[in-house]
Image 1 (tube, rainbow, N blue to C red):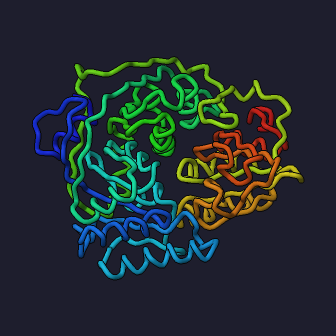
Image 2: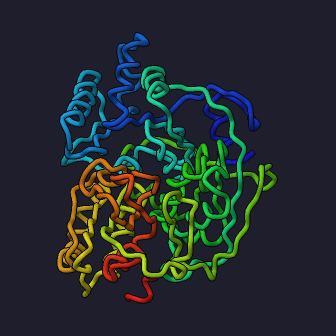
Length: 420
């Protein structure tokens, strides 16, 4: 079996499972945020649930409109806050103690290898970087999950992606994933597991692995996943605050795959997704004279400390072009503090960038950097749909922190080697 199949089998009391089978699996964690919690609460109560299945296994994070941007957002956040208090939810995170959910949960040790975690957010698939099965759900499913601690799944087929060779300088997990989307399209892995492997993956730091699994949903995948290795286990040991047991699973050598893709990435260049789909990709050198009004470096995709260090490497000793707004968003309070202590904030501020409290904010057009009609942004986020970050007449290009920071300096999309 594949790693995904093994995890689903273990959690459904089965020796084996095969793609297409329906199973009912116990859950190790259930996540909701300020956009989805209030809907899930309504359904939760409507189904007659009185309490959550486990007060230590339900995770509520107010991150999308944090700090509250509108009265409606304030009401939604209050609903999550009241529910967490009423049910005694141990892991409730709010302004000043929170972070963007998909960076926060691994950081807090709330997701471990071999677990099943579901969340009321499509990018819950991020945790596959730890060798967990994680996937997004609608709020009704999250209500059932919070009340019962289990859900049904259809076992997905798995597509294997093998990345041969080492990534060149300035090529990151974001570039590998954008390259992949350009090859297979935004529906190329529909309801399938995307399993990432190969030399480039084994050499990729955890930040890059989180980025790749985070964007598996952009190919329509049920989940993204990477076999745990020494890099994974080092991360788990550093962040294991819950001290709970877990099981590590690996794909069998003779596991069956729906298809296998294999690419040599040793000569890959940075990749940019052009408006208005993540699979509309170009190598950065192909884009000439694309002016930029705003640059956003952050989000659950690229707001981790490694991403901020990459941006600082480009911005150090340089200035953001005077007609560009550059917004830096550390993904969690801990990352914020670490970046500050490492001196990254000094670099950002001297370059003319703004530093935000952790928030999803501009990624989904919530606040903290909404675009006007005709404006162009380069963003390290995960989606560039029409109107995603503001006015339907705006345009968003997706890129790595290296490319985003270089574009902020140049005022146009540019290869980082032309700046550094």
